[in-house]
Each structure stands twice: as C-alpha cells, then as structure tokens.
Length: 288
Image (tube, rainbow, N blue to C red; front, side, top):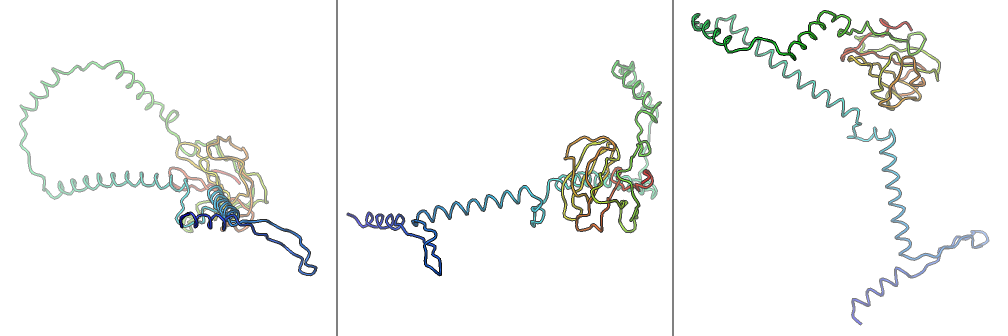
C-alpha cells in the first residue's frame, strides 16, 4: 500500500470519525442534549450557514432602503436625473458655442474687420432667373396640407397649442395652515402645510407618478408628472398608496401624511410645484 493511499485513509478517517457533543446540567450533571458529529458534518453545516447569511444580507441590501446608506450606491432615479442633466448640459454647451460665434461675428462687423465684397448685380439677376426657370413652383399636395395645418395652428394658437400654468386647475392636496411659505432666498421652494398625522394626501391634478419611494431626509416621497413640463412633489409622508408609473386623477388619494424623515419638524406636508425646471409658489395657484 502506497503512502498516498495511507494518507487518504487517514484523512477520510479524521473527517468521518464520530464525536459526541453533550449538554449537561451543571448542578446535577444530567445529560440534556446530545449530538453525534463528524468533522465533515461540521464543515458542511458551517458552509451552508455562511452561504445562507450571505444570501440574506444580499437580499436585505438589494430590496430595502438600507442600500441608500451604502457608500458609492446610486439609485435608478438619481441615475436617470444624472442622464437628463448631462443631456441638458450638452444642449446648453451647443447653445453657448453658437452664441459665442454669433457675438464674435457681431464684434467683427462693429470693428470693421469684415472685408468688402464686390457684387455684380447682372450676374445675380441672371442666376436668379436661371433658378426660377428650372424650379417647379407649384406646391405639392403634402405641402398644401402642411401649410393649411400650420396656418390653422397659428390662427388658433391660443386655444389649441399654447398651454400655460394658469390653464391648469389645481386642487389643494390637503387643507391646513401654512407653517413655512415659499422663499427663494432661503431656498425653500415649497409650502409646508400643518395637518394632523395620517391625513390623506390627494393629487393636485391629473398625471402619472414619476417617482414614489422612501428617502432618508424626507421619508416617503411621491412626484407626479402632469404634462407640459409641470410636476408636483409631496414629501414627509408615512406611507404611499401609489407606485411609480401609476396614473392618478385629481383629488385621488396618493399618500398618508406623517412626521418622518431627517428634515421633518412635525406632522406636515411639504408641497412643491415645478414648471420646466423652475419652482413655482403653490400659494399663487392653490388656496390651502
């Protein structure tokens, strides 16, 4: 028998050698519990417990708000906002580049740096005449339909295409006294309405739920997109009755008020109105 086989038998014997784990009463030495164990059983059981703990921890972090406290983690909502801001930044850079080019051109003209150009009138007239001879100036059917549509929109633009914030009918999400009003100097772009705890919070207008989740500073937050770049924000709720993507009607219950979140100072609703990225004073449009 080789040495390798002897070592394997010794290892197998060690792994499968049975031990007895006994729990005794310290006073009477009465045997209460006894377990028959082997090194292999202990190793397998320990591995299974470790895997189970890792799985439970992963699920707990992935599907609970605790993940927001993990350094380096970013939620899907924040990623979406970052992409939107990046797109807007690119658009602004393009506009700034065009404005700079235009301003530089104007400066060149004002300084007299534009060279004079000699124009031959006869050649221009001949070229224009040649172009009109080969062009078919009769409008096509599609062009006529488009012209009629544009003309109709321009004629009734006030009623068909122009939509302002004042055209919306807003309903108060809750009724109560305002403890903190809209103040741009303090960067408080909202009104805080004092209400009893567990008061139903209602949608101020028809729309679709853009965001509905728990945050560490404002507890449960829900944001509704009403279309035409108009959104409303409801913070410091104890629970939500709607989820992201749901369509809601005006005065439909969307949340239950509370007094939670790091920035909460008591039972109240923090309500915001935004139009095209600009904060609006809700008191201007709603009588709370």
